[in-house]
Image 1 (cartoon, rainbow, N blue to C red):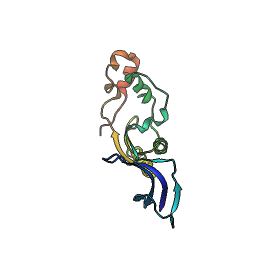
Image 2 (image 1 turned 45 degrees about the horizontal axis):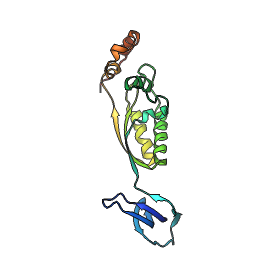
Image 3 (image 1 turned 180 degrees about the horizontal axis):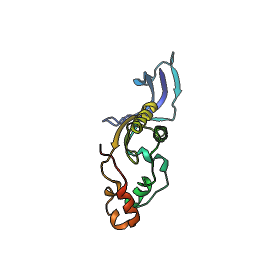
Length: 185
């Protein structure tokens, strides 16, 4: 059992309560009690004086396949950014271990910042695999973070996914993109 002593708590309940100087008892990973004074005996104690406890935050939109790209493609138009963030002719496939590691990297960062639940719309290039998506699931399981994972397994060629690309992209790349194979699922 873990006892958080003297914490300020923003409950985020309907009343929007702010509780000052409260103790919080954690038992088997769940809040068992909140009170002004909970006895310390037989518990691991953490002093939370001057600390604010809030419910875990939710990241409602993530693409874990982009975790390695932080800061690389900022402020680009969407169509150009898509060509860099998932280059259709020079990206992947990645090993299950690499997919696991990039997902775990993002999960670590989220937990560090108070995120306890995520909606991950993950893509695997050039196409999705059971092994790759299993690595994503395993990373979130190992981190202990709740995750809803959306699998991007398209049955269209990459070139057909980006508006206006045929009008602005060089013809030699259009031909390469048109010849890229895609499995139907």
